[in-house]
Length: 261
Image (tube, rainbow, N blue to C red):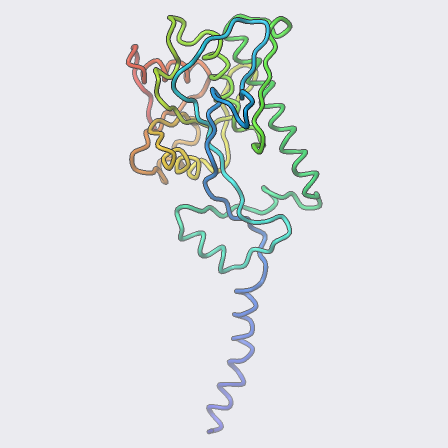
């Protein structure tokens, strides 16, 4: 072995060590994938997702399917640079800051409680928005929403639509869905304002995987949704609950124009 070769080996060893360390070192990211979709007009584990007391309800057809994402990164598992690079090149995965999924300094139990609180707040807002639209008093009509294993606020829009469908439908004896399966996501405020959600592109993929072709979503996220739109899914952007109801009317073929990004 020549002196030059020995020198190259000696110099390359630290560089190689740094490369290996960089590849194996844990990074502050989490990897998300499309989660299950859930029909808010149906039941989960034998319990209706939407239960209403104090108002007459109706039988519904069709589906209002809320979309979810799930983390494949365990709370205590490191994410390596190789995982991050792989996810960046995989349209079925997304890389997000770890603190957005598992806030630093919080235990798994505290994170679960936080997600549950966000879901409960979302349910309260959905009930307020839906009952307000119907002209009903929350003091007289009680809404109970049950959806195990789903946390966070992004189901609000679909909950509100489900409540309206259960009580009034389209106002003419028919269903909001027109018998179709409609997917959707979006937070909701008590005044009916629809807000942005995380993982919009993965939620598109979730509804497409489950055979849903129309996807209600926050209008403010059109650019991101368009960049990752799966073939065969129509994006239906809305800003408010009233927008969503008008879009469903147009999708039923009952008048109006279906909005698009």
